[in-house]
Figure 1 (tube, rainbow, N blue to C red):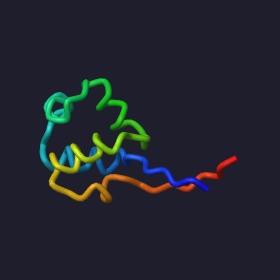
Figure 2: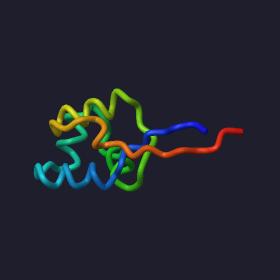
Figure 3: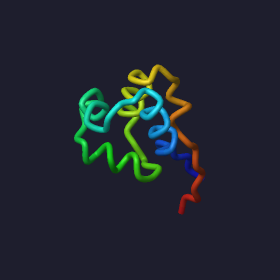
Figure 4: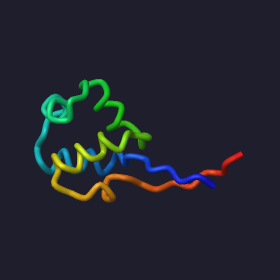
Amino acid sequence: MAALALLNHEILRREMKARKLTEEALAEQLGITDRHLRNLLTKDTNSSCSLVYRISKVFGIPMEVLVEPKTTERS
């Protein structure tokens, strides 16, 4: 089995709303496009560690809060 860490879109959206950040403002702070952020806000997404780290720094929360571990069968 392999473990994946998916960025939890519901937590991302909740933290963004709590800080009254617009999509444009957050995307700029993270160094990503608005479109990329909209994709992250739509569904749980396999994201790079560096992006999850930047999100955790912007929100001031541990990276572990942002990810949802999943276990998959490896062939």
